[in-house]
Length: 192
View (cartoon, rainbow, N blue to C red):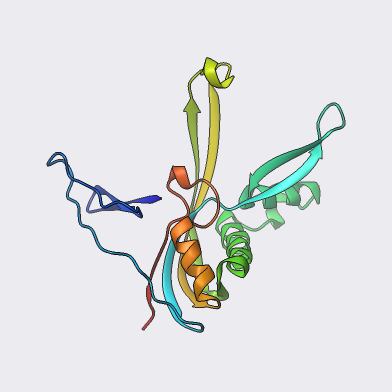
């Protein structure tokens, strides 16, 4: 699992791996640290997370069969507002939607991953929509160019540990989908 950030105009990668990376060329400056978080119930942690917060919706395809669609939480909220016929001038601005819907997604993730977050202690920013193109692949049945759309939100704030074992598992496995696109790696440190 990895996360790409930027420091002083240069790319910075955080990588969580079972194997220590090796520098085969002098192109990268690599610093390794052992990662064994010790957590306790009730402990407060400062965290940072880039995630692909999605919801799954079901509808019917042209043959009337149930079909699953994944939508990012921001676009899903905007679609709901359109269906509810809320006029554009009465809809919240995108940053408000990102904060509200992103927080709610993270709160639900915490229920299953050993932590809880409180409103006012989490900031959800940096909403981005990224499109990647996969080339034609006859072996996998992909015809023509196929695009993959990934939306991300950057979360930061303070969380409270509710189940240390579950949170440690989530820290090693990641939170949410799109891990191969740099999402899901939660960075933590004790709160002061």
